[in-house]
Image (cartoon, rainbow, N blue to C red; front, side):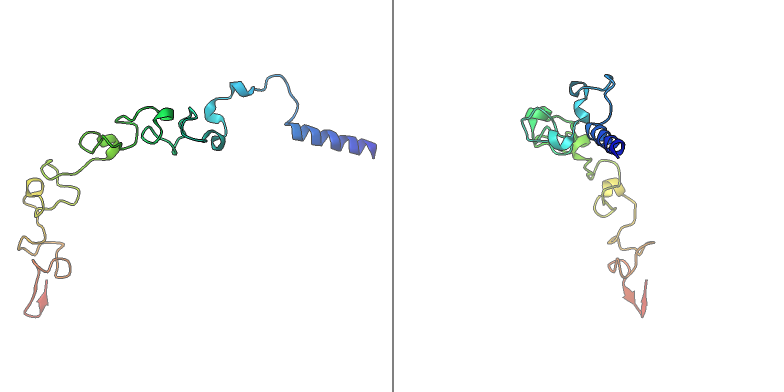
Length: 143
């Protein structure tokens, strides 16, 4: 019985202490900051740690540096024209590409020649339900 209790106590002690020290375990100073518990590291703006997904150069320049084009945040001094990487590409009529909801009717410069609702022709894909201006019902027939 004594042997069982001694084995139990030693097992609990080794389990609670994390095992046997061999002298090769890393010390806290050797553990990279990225491996530290993020919940503890993401304390507050000004703690000298830029918390990923929580802080950015726009919300906490003290920790993350000054805002710049390419930092993943569309900052107040950036726009789609000046920094498409952060703010996204703005599709404008006249950019030579028929995109972003442009049609032959809304942007003939980019989409000229393409049929659109309102061009007076009942084209493929148009019908009375989605384009009654081009495909009216008449003589009992709807296109």
